Length: 129
Image (tube, rainbow, N blue to C red; front, side, top):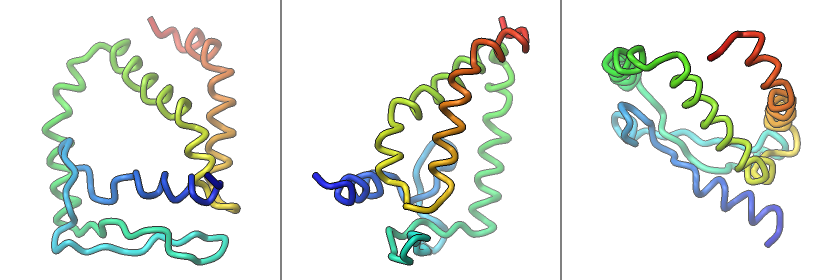
């Protein structure tokens, strides 16, 4: 499988709808817009084009979820965020294969690697229990 084939597979696997209240949903009116590769202008896919009503729905869902999140201990919230970071790192190769030749993804991956190396020191300096 070529790099281009792997990149297409990654793009195809990513949801294109809106995640609101833990559920994937189309934008109001099912509107979409094209996502282009900045290196060559080729359209990679179409994603949901959120409306103001979709934004309000997302905000309402966040407000509803906030008390449950706040009820978790700082340690538990940190562990959840850390697990999300670990998943990104596990899938780093897929993300790198799916990046464009010129774009911010490579910077993100580089910074993530840097964060990984600094994590124990930062955790201790922030006094996370």
